[in-house]
Length: 210
Image 1: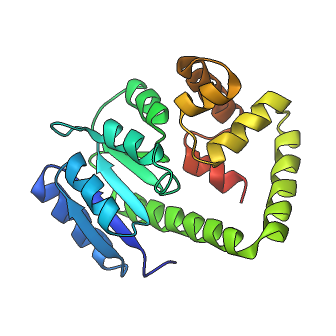
Image 2: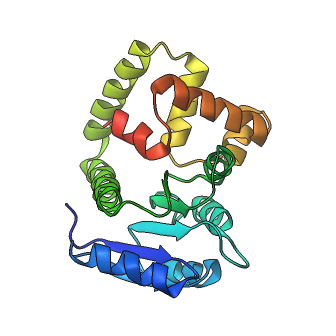
């Protein structure tokens, strides 16, 4: 557990912000609050943030817009970003994937699930940092493990390249540019490869290849 992590909670409803704050405070995290996407971006510029929990429905810049802004910024794109939404159906998932969201939680959020998901994402974040600090040997080991698992799932070369881009935090627009296809086509490929791997989000994808 990364008890010294800083979590940014973004919601235009004060009661919702405080509820999440009180829930996560017991785990020893540093907690920052923002009431809008614009305020959240200002916080990201000012502080090192380890995880973002963001409501989807907000006036002005909504959660999808904030997520896209985070994932398109070179200094922030590796920050795990979770969208909290009361929206129903698959549309919000598709929009969240398009924005680069790492995971989704449906409101009202189960308290136990939220705490578990935060701990898991922070653990993955810590492992990524350790891999970066460990240099080439750690990365070679992790890549060999990833290649073995992708081969076991029968992924094609193009699908393996797509997984690599997803693990780097690239958005569908960036993946489309890299692969010479439209962002919409890249999103469909992303959904297909996640389904093939039995993952519903980027965090599940990262968990699979740890």
